[in-house]
Image 1 (tube, rainbow, N blue to C red):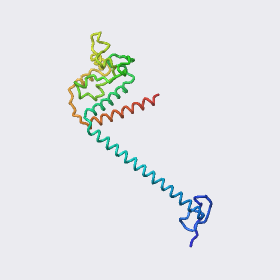
Image 2: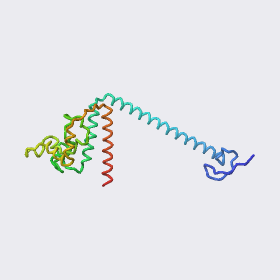
Image 3: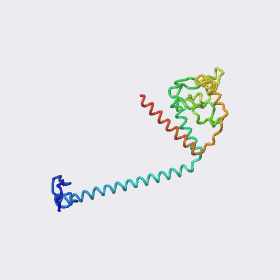
Image 4: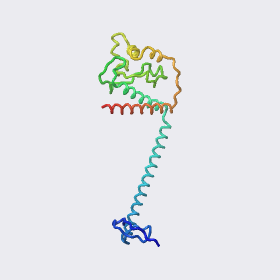
Length: 213
């Protein structure tokens, strides 16, 4: 019978000549110690696997619960989420721009914040342009609320808004915005996609701004 090559004991690390191919201990005591170590290691793996399986079950249960809750949400809930994400993107996109209507760069802090996403053509009258980036720009809360600083000059906020759009982009944009446009038939899934799209665009803008700092 061919003799086996020497190897190190997995307990004491000393060299020895094994009697069998599966032998990795140099003495009976070390065989028992190695068996205990192997058992403990296997038990740790089993415990880790059980914990992992439990976490996966809990995650699946939470996802199912979340899905059930979302399933009963009205479409208006997702419209609001999509609009919030869109508005945040417009404010970040125009971060370095003044108010599109009055040109203010540092308005007073009103109603919990200084800036809104102001639609040139309102969401109510032109719902088809609700999520069109060409129809929305950063606007101070005063102008977006209809109390523009130019009212005393006999010029409405919307007129100043239009003048600024023409100055920045040309008459063609204003003519295009005024339509006509086809009214999209958005569904719940469409609003979810719009929400996710603008949340990602917000994250991208934030990353780009952080890289510039």
